[in-house]
Structures are given as C-alpha cells and as structure tokens.
Length: 71
Image (cartoon, rainbow, N blue to C red; front, side):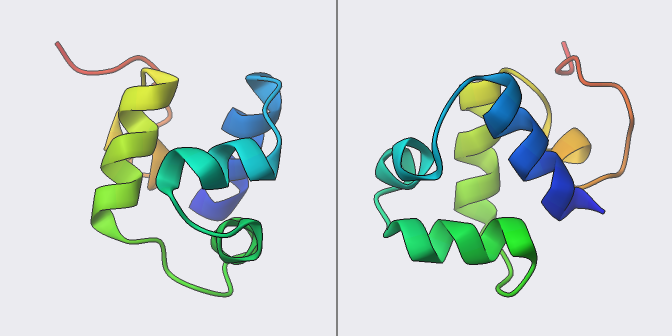
C-alpha cells in the first residue's frame, strides 16, 4: 500500500512527520492522516515528495517497485 511508502521514505530519510508537514506547508496531523491512509494525499503533494525523496510518483503510489526516478 502506498501509504506505507510515505512512512518508509520519511523514516529512511531520518525525517519527522513535522519536518515533512513543514515541507508540504500543512499541519503534522494532516500529514499523519496521509501516511495512515485516512485522507487521500493531493497530487501536488505527491509530486513535491517525489522531488524531495528523489524518486518517482509511481513509486510513491505503488505502481512500481523501482525506487529510482525516471530519466
């Protein structure tokens, strides 16, 4: 499930939910709900996170298991 990938990417980058929430300019609770799958994450946020983590939106969304971004 791609929600788990949000948490995995954050943890692997040694970031807190608050740091990622600040990056997305939202409250920590809002970001926590994205990670838990309570709320759908907006497309603009997926794009911003893909750029931040240097991966593809497809990886975050679970459409590929290749973590490397497309060329």
